[in-house]
Length: 105
Image 1 (cartoon, rainbow, N blue to C red):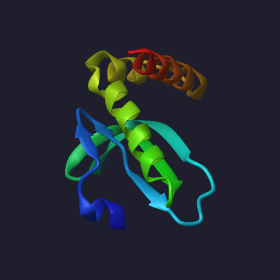
Image 2: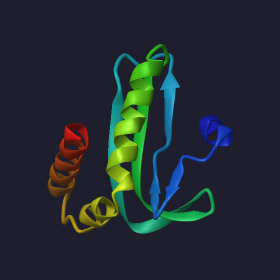
Image 3: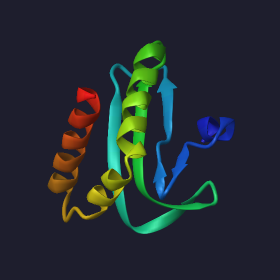
Image 4: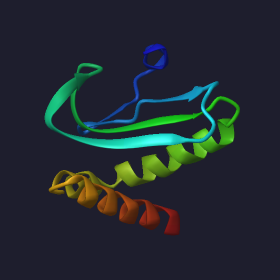
């Protein structure tokens, strides 16, 4: 919550990427959530949330991961494709494909 007070991590279009660097974190930890019922996040309705926690000392890695996420979520069809998934496995597979495509650019 302290990180959110520094600036919104909502991207608009129902997408948020709350993220932080944490001292007791050993490696990046992430979770992609698709909510069937959107929640209010920084006064916006959000249904796609990518939570990212990175080791405190990994500033460069943190920025690199955020850049990849920005490329993925900047493409309008990507969010819609994620919203069309029917289960966790499909959500994961679609997102993995989107990340691969963003990295191939």
